[in-house]
Length: 146
Image (cartoon, rainbow, N blue to C red; front, side, top):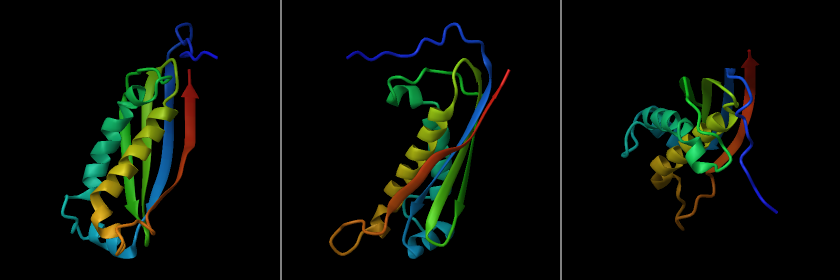
């Protein structure tokens, strides 16, 4: 069995956008630390926004069948709930292929960044993570206009 990248060379460039979303379930105390900017590694929301933007641009380097495309715009939106931090990322381009993978990559890596920044506060007495869960990563909207 062989694998190959899909040939998009004959497709026209059109406006495309995708929005992806996901959350990380955290201890309520950790969410409060994030809200009050008490995480020793720094501002979790600001850092994760930057990670989302840079990750969208790197999707093709992580996923071998993802085409390298020019990204025109990335907008992360991060909010806190009682026991979770959620991230939504909008990615726009004018290209021959969609930006769903870029949006999904941005959300996934940004959520991993959150975990990395708060892991000290999420561990139990045995050094495990019984409360921390990354969940619900999905594309919530996709647009294609000629």
